[in-house]
Image (cartoon, rainbow, N blue to C red):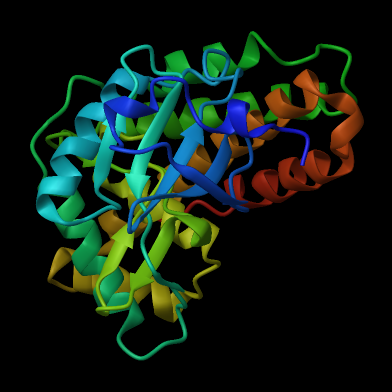
Length: 291
């Protein structure tokens, strides 16, 4: 490991531990932050050092600390232990559990329940402004990249979807915005929780639903089950239309995120994957359902 223990254990550890924490191992899963498992007395804790790309990725660390406090109180996340006032690192309890699998009996029902509970949390001081985030990502993408023209072509398609969602007048709710496989844990008690809330903000609830469909490659029947359980009614054509546009927006933001990463460290990731994602998005954009 290139990091030393002095790099891993923050110098102000006494703010959240009675004795100097002991490094156990690095944790896999995070694509930008550096995350470590440490022990503090008899407790296992996770220390996450925030990425230097936080500003480029338009991450609101103050909002993250705010939402973690709310989610901790509701039992929906790994309990927050300490948030560095300078937002350089974060400490949470370590949750023993297993990844969430969509094939497990009752998995989609538990997922819909978690999502309803997240969306019922008190509001925070951060709003997901899709167009502003897109502009922020674009400002850090290499204009000489071989995928740049494809991204520009996608931009026109996504503008249509953004305008479509603007026409829907729904009260914003607190959204996680990053419910990937790595960020869902079935605890040893059987409860499903979400971790890594750094993208959380107020927004449209269908953004989270779209993220789940895309990240977990849900089939049409699984999408139907998730929507029906979450909405507590049979989804109608308006729901499917709305889901489609948010799926397109979500995947576009994901592609821009990867393009930003590629632009920051070109030697460590392959641009061909970004091109493939762009082509898949153009296919999705061509299949807008009737409303």
